[in-house]
Length: 457
Image (cartoon, rainbow, N blue to C red; front, side):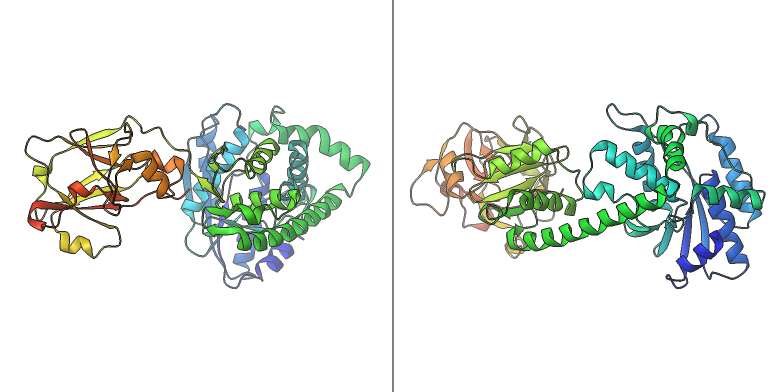
């Protein structure tokens, strides 16, 4: 049964290259044995490798590594052992942390074109569904596990997802296999173990086909989620101004349920954690805040901000108001520009005497007069709102008003590099040079340009 299932599954992948995720437990041992047998019989035409991940959580780890080596030598399969360091984090599941570390290790071990193969079975599917139900998950969580999923640039496959734990145990008994018994599998402090030992047996005793019916429900949830994603993709095409911006007027045309669906989908396209119900409610409320307000909702990994008619997705910014750096203009020569690495991934500010070359660049800003010998030149992110006269204006105005004129969102105004000679504003990098410091004589000037900018999430 198991070998037939694998043969049929991999017939959909011509000449696959397989990387088996091997713990040494009964599930992965059966997977290893059956795939090695099929390869030996030439029933599958596949290159097979094995990866064992040591999570650093058990005192028996070295014995498990030795067992993995022994088994792979027995089946004449190459083995890679990867050690990861899983540290407990408050309010985060140790199981989830270990799983994430394991998947990162598998991705690092996989070659281009590899299918990463795991031994998940139908009992695992039931446990995953029940855990999602316990967490109050939506359709995506209740979809549980799929037979294939993207894992970075690779594809992770679960060919045994329709096979029961009982069938796996029967295969292991038939072939007299040995395997590792992880002592943590009996620790019912872990939710999955509690379900496995206390709940699932009672469900199966009462309803013998419960695993199949739960798998069917998970498949229904998956199909429903696909429809919601298709709808959200259409809505996103109507609303998206740029990779990180959404049109508020288009968002306001959506029903509340459709809006929440779109916001979740938008965040998922950036591979960000989903917001709570309360956070979604706050985001929806900020759409119609007063026009002179710039509300923000901070999520676990990002912020949602509104400015004028757009909703912005940004990273969580560091406070850089106290950062400043003094510039030594004497260090700049024709062949040596001065590169200033700005904080919080804001890019590199470049001062150069090679203005003709700089002028051809997209980030060209202009020529700035050289300071006098005694002037102290500094870059800062704070100011006391001085009057300034940008090169494009006829009259001076306060810096805050000028930045508002340029329609720069409020949070970005705190992240602009201000260039000062002593305490006088000379330029705002990436925006303008003050008229009194705009040079037309290249011999007495520096070119200024800004490379980089707001990082992607």
